[in-house]
Each structure stands twice: as C-alpha cells, then as structure tokens.
Length: 375
Image 1 (cartoon, one colour):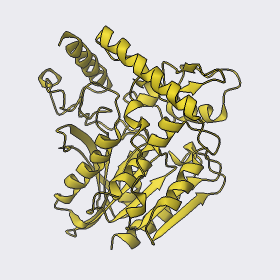
Image 2 (cartoon, rainbow, N blue to C red):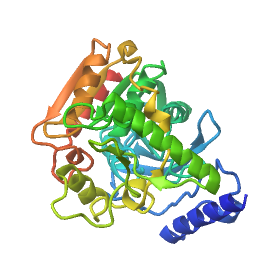
Image 3 (cartoon, one colour):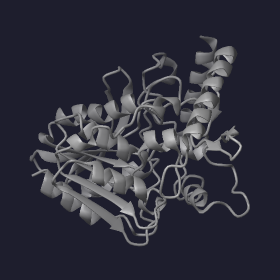
Image 4 (tube, rainbow, N blue to C red):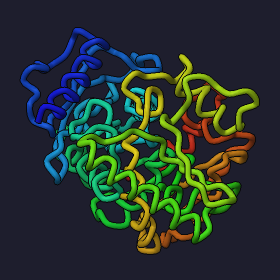
C-alpha cells in the first residue's frame, strides 16, 4: 500500500505542477481507477480553434476505469443531432497531442468529436501507470462510443472511430466487434500485437521464432525481478535481439538526447515527442517508458484476428515513406469490408501524419470519408 501511495502522490504532484486549475481535488483521488487529473486550462500542443466549443469530460469503461477526454463541438451546430467520431492515439501519446488535433479539426468540419486518454495513461485512471492491453484498450474505444451515444448533440446511429499509429490496430479490433461503430479510419497505423510479438522491421517482421522465444524469456525473467522488488520496472517496448540471441531493451522509450548519426525513424519520433513541436509532460513517449513487462499483453493476442469480419466503411491512411506502411497495407488486405479505401500520402513519413507541421495530413479525405459513411 505504501508503494502505491507513493506512486499516486508523484503522479498527482506532476499533474498539479502542469496547472493550478483543475476540476477535482488531488487529495481525494484515492480510487486507483479515478482520473489522475482533469486540467481545465488549454495545455495542448496545437492552437485552440475559435470555431469549436471544447469541454473536458470523463466516462467509465467496462472495467471501471475512468477515462478523461476532450469533447469538441462545432459552434454553428444549432439544435441538430450530429455524427460523432472518437479519436485516440498514437501509442504512448496523450489527447493533447495528435488525437486532439485530429478531433478539433474534424469538429471544425461539422462532427462532434472526442479525443481521449487510454486507460493507465495521461489523465485517465488506472494503476499501475503506463500500462497497455489489447483487450482493455480496445474496450476504451467502445467506452468512448458509450459516452458519445448518450450526448444530446449526437445521433447515436452515426458514430465512427479513428485510430492513429498503434491505436489504428485497436480501432480495427473494436470495429470488428462493436456493431454500433458505423465507420472506422486509421492514420499511419501500427498493429501493436504484431509489432511487439514479431518486431518492427524494414517492411516485414523482424523476429525469428528463436528471437520471439528469447523475448518471451526476457520479459518473464523481468516478472520475477518485479515480484521480488515489489515494484514494476520501466522500459521501452521495442525489444532487440542480436545475432547471438542476446536480448536488450532501453530504459526509456526515447533517449534524453539523440545519439550521433541516429536511426532516421528514431529521429522522426524524437523530433516530435521530445521537442517543443509535440512534447507533452503527460505523454509516455515524451517523458519516460512503459512498464517493462507491458509487451507480454500483446505477444499472443493478435488484434486483427477478425479483421475479415469488418463490414463497415473503412479508410486506411499511411505515408509513402512511413516505416509502418506495411502494417497499413496488410491491414487493408485483411479487412473484409467491400467499402474500403487505402490512401498513401505522397512523400509522407510516419510522424508527418501526427501533426500538420509538414502539411501532409489529408484532413479533406478524412472529412469526406466520415461524411459519406455517417449519413
């Protein structure tokens, strides 16, 4: 109990330092599933739109974890019930980064949108912190649909979802199960179960069967260490296996400083998450790491097992130069919908579609897709 209290106190102090304006008392947050914070000041990595009304909201998922989100509504909506879109991602990001930008921009186009922090991350509840799960995080999308469907401004028969990066796989998984979702879109999607279970490679899986077994041994040895220490060690989720079968993982998702001659993909992520362009103190990717054993949840739980059963309109967007492009192309081929489209953005790398610094996010295509699909 002492360890939990210490961790919760640290989390509360961090969030309190970000803003003195909140809608809850940190001293009262003794429920491990309660929000870590609900900061009401504008602390996004993008400018606030004067065409959109913004509300801080919270809602529970089916496991009792309270999620915190930002609801965006067009100011010129009148009394009409509108189509709605739930947005989340990238993996390890928070709603103040990419998902909020996508949500606010689509709200400017006439949708009610909700960008939310997944369980165990950002302002949302759940202990321990910095954990992910293919099951619970898929449920987070359905919980967002629950929330949107009871808002008086929303037509519950016209709800779609949009997943960015690792949340693209979660969105497709939710769309194959939740019949209330009427359209699904992804942007530079990752299948996180494939990424962690088989390694992210150059256009194909990186792990051999022996590599995969070595990773499992490494992660399960870490469980013994955590059990002995009574705490959860932190670590990066991209685990490396050398030619001799030695397994290593970084202590952080991104380094404090770039090494000399960095891998171009590492530099892409660093230039967004660690620099003013996209840095946010609550983002796992910006500030630290997941629990070291987090990948175990994804190792044998393939997210796209039922992609062939997706029958609703599906839009999959990726970059021509994105290292993740093969995830998107394989997912597109697996989706069973007869109304599906693959958009490859010319010249765009993976992180180009996180924000519009390079002007490459095809917002017009996302807008048209959802307007056509959520009539």
